[in-house]
Image 1 (tube, rainbow, N blue to C red):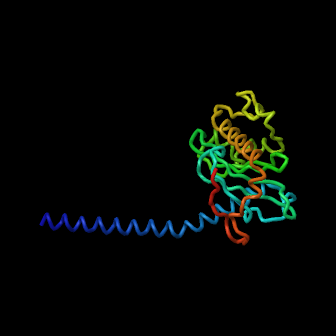
Image 2 (cartoon, rainbow, N blue to C red; image 1 turned 90 degrees about the vertical axis):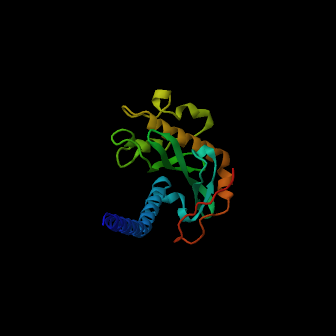
Image 3 (cartoon, rainbow, N blue to C red; image 1 turned 135 degrees about the horizontal axis):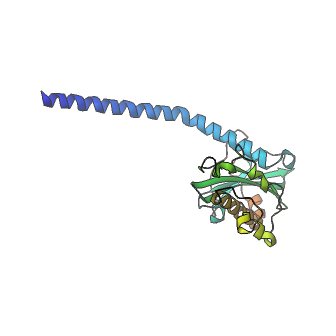
Length: 222
């Protein structure tokens, strides 16, 4: 009798486990497409924020390449969107990663024109501490807008640090690691753009020409 009860309970537990797994898989499949669409919409919104409309007549997300270079924070592929007017290069929106955030990687998008003027910087994703490091998010504070309008040049690299390290950018009260990580990531990405700007504009389009097709994530070798 005891054996039969154990077998019965075991079968019931197995059934519950199978049903639970199926429900989780179903929920994931239903929400995955919605999440992907929301991520795409957020990216499109950010691209419009970091590259003004008057600097391009093309669809940014339909004209891109991708690079794999440690200067962009990790060795994962990072997408670079190209802005053009009448086919002529005007600006880039480049993804980068700050790998040394307080709570992990911080994903960024940096807009810069062909004269190396910063058009804007936005945070795509982060896990920084609420009330401290999360001030990098535009929804929390306007700190990230301090990059806008700054001109980048190798001769002025010392200013591309937080004030605590002798640079121009504010740190947060009680949280220096996060802003330091973001400033360094932006600086390194701009160095990469300065050295590779022509190559980035001439690289084959990896996003296709159909404006309804989201960007791909293929990569050029270093």
